[in-house]
Length: 64
Picture 1 (cartoon, helix red, strand yellow):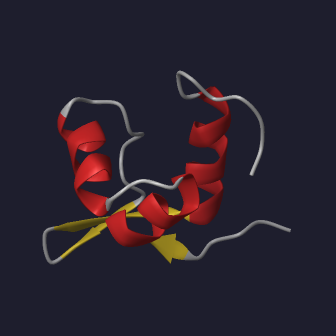
Picture 2 (cartoon, rainbow, N blue to C red):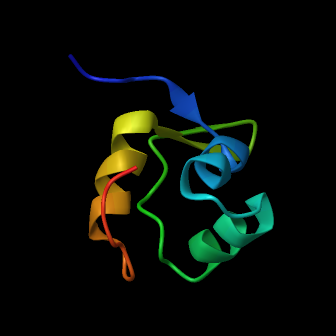
Picture 3 (cartoon, one colour):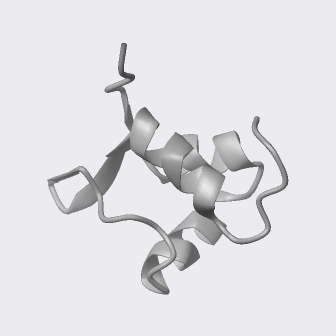
């Protein structure tokens, strides 16, 4: 079963243990995958998209 919940910067930040501004910086520098949805100018990612990205991101040392 896939997790199709949409996560904003806030949920991504909580998942990886950083502040939302850090996640915004990741997006600005091309370190996040493309958003799965943009609504009213705000990007959102499926939880599964974020979890997959976390396993590939630099400095990743194991699952959460």
